[in-house]
Length: 154
Image 1 (cartoon, rainbow, N blue to C red):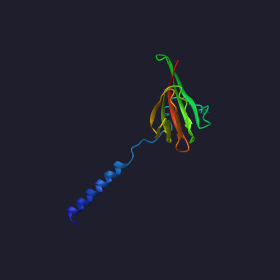
Image 2 (image 1 turned 45 degrees about the vertical axis):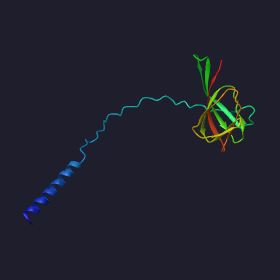
Image 3 (image 1 turned 90 degrees about the vertical axis):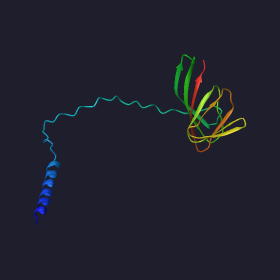
Image 4 (image 1 turned 180 degrees about the vertical axis):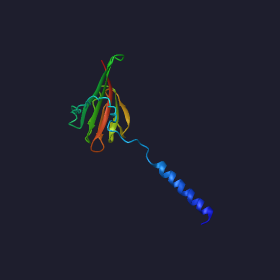
């Protein structure tokens, strides 16, 4: 073998030996008296909300069901904020419009009719129904879920 070839082989073996030694784990041997891992802070018991009970809205023959999710007094307005969840079936039903209410479609599609105006509203659509308005809603599919937000007066 030529001297340059011997030098290359020697350098290659040296680098391989260094890599082998350097890749070995330098972890200390575990002792039987290891420290215990710090304990996590105790978490309180999770309180699950009771499943909402949907009640049929009077005069809708079961096509409209709703439940109140949240009510909060707003003293500065002399009113209470009310958030309801509404389930709507494919049968057309007039919604009670005793107060101005903001509606949002959470799931499904809704066909709303007010006078001669007919609109299809999809998931994420918002609209306001004024106090005393005559609006008929029906789900375009099997069911639609709405959120209704209103201020209940004094």
